[in-house]
Image (cartoon, rainbow, N blue to C red):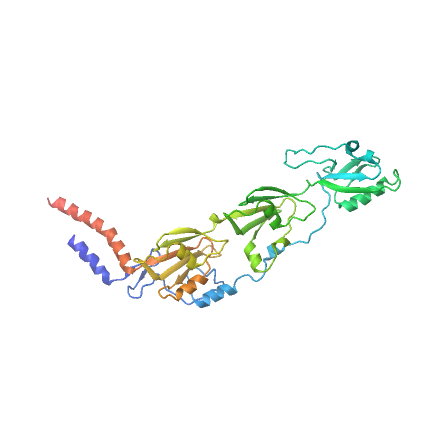
Length: 376
């Protein structure tokens, strides 16, 4: 037992064992990693194996790398409002003035009832799947693809041989041909019906009751023709772009993702290790450390704070902050974390040493006890 303890004490003059995967370092100038002065071409995604010190230059490089314009795939969703055109399943009302006999059911009022799809029915003519209606005198007539005014003029021309100077008005009584779907973290998920007012992305979300407290406004996705596009709503606001430029089309699927999917993990020598929710995709290193209660006063080595991040290739990349001086907190405040980043604080050498001793001494005691039993 005495020999084992003497061996352990002799290790104090040797290198200090660091966190797993970071090798060894001298106790006097201890770092868990060999630090470089490299600023990557993409400062948010450095190459694997390169340790980036968090400095003023890095913060500036990250700011310069921020998007200055809307992504092309999002721009492709921008559109110009166009008049609503009649489509299959729409219900239209046709009025021929001075000819009440041409009203549906001879002018009788039909009570509105909800159909199985949850859409209120209305009196009028239902446009068939082929885009046609059947009307007295003129029979089956294709009306799909026309606006209300265009359809009124067309019907008047067709009725002219049978009615002298016909005055026709067509109005859409029930919009049923176009719909989008909103799901995820909204208060009332479900189907949104298109009307003569163009449907924009914010309007669809507003109709669905708005985004819940658990929703992430940076992770709104729009799926169209089997292609899914991510839309960062706060980024559009920061760029001065009105999200109402994004016009929805029939059968679009809008999904608002949950904030739980994009957490930041704070580990190591902090007061309260935690998985932290980002605020609409934003969280600084300073905020993360603050929400975790800060570095442990007794055990944390504040000169060894790391941010571990998977880069664009899926390889781990490392950022290092030396927070031994209060001035480093300003850097931490301006260092933006990314979803699923891991913040890790090393222990001081003495804590690391004590933990190694606590692992080895029980084993040494067992060996000593076995020797004593054998001696008896």
